[in-house]
Image 1 (tube, rainbow, N blue to C red):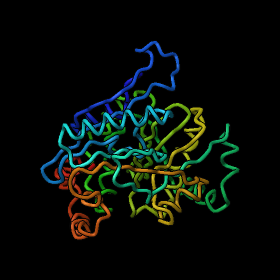
Image 2 (image 1 turned 120 degrees about the vertical axis):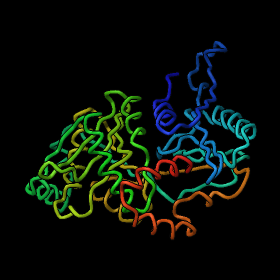
Image 3 (image 1 turned 90 degrees about the vertical axis):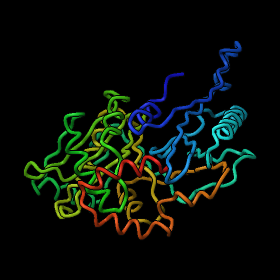
Image 4 (image 1 turned 180 degrees about the vertical axis):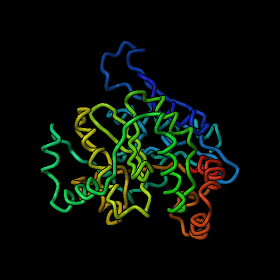
Length: 323
């Protein structure tokens, strides 16, 4: 099996310790590939939040890599044993389907993955949008916003927009080196999109192409420029890019049904798919590290008042400990 690029990127970018459990049918002269499987894991540890074994942090979907239920159970058996050995608070697997296993104490289905099937041409894609979406994209073009593609050379502008947006949301920002690591791990299959207004970056996104799917793990825009419709223009270009790269599906990421982000993604035609996060609890509660926990509301309001330069310094030290 090939190495997992997400595991590589997150290990290097956030300092997590990688672990993997695998079942290789070929080692037993078994020609049935369905008898093979893998489960990439990362050890997330901090004094503030605790210690966790996760597949995988940051990404929306990971967990066991097999369609064989028996292989999946054996992989989870091994992961549970590893969690016990490492003494973690919990094991967290981010699946897209529920896998039956006696070790799982809790399952979270509060969010859905928003995905859009892509046609073979950008012309078909454009025609599939409702008039309101097309008008907002046109307004973005008329506002003078320009769209630029690149990789490491755009990282500074991307991170400038991303850090501002995370501060406004009250969320600790990831370190810049994480995104550099993602670009390195995926090579030409990862790229950055930056939208500028009069040479000032006002919206930016990270795009990753894997197989027949394109996903946007991180996308941000500056609120004070909402009137330019830069975010709408950017997403149109992200979708165009996916079609041009031959992708058959665009993954907008996770959202809570009925939320503003859910409605934003749905207007492009994206449909909800299951997101099933399963937990083997050893200590505490899953809610202890959930960012939407009521106990963090005051911290979020405080964070939103901090200067962006300060959040870039202390944010990465906090966020790397959150599974």
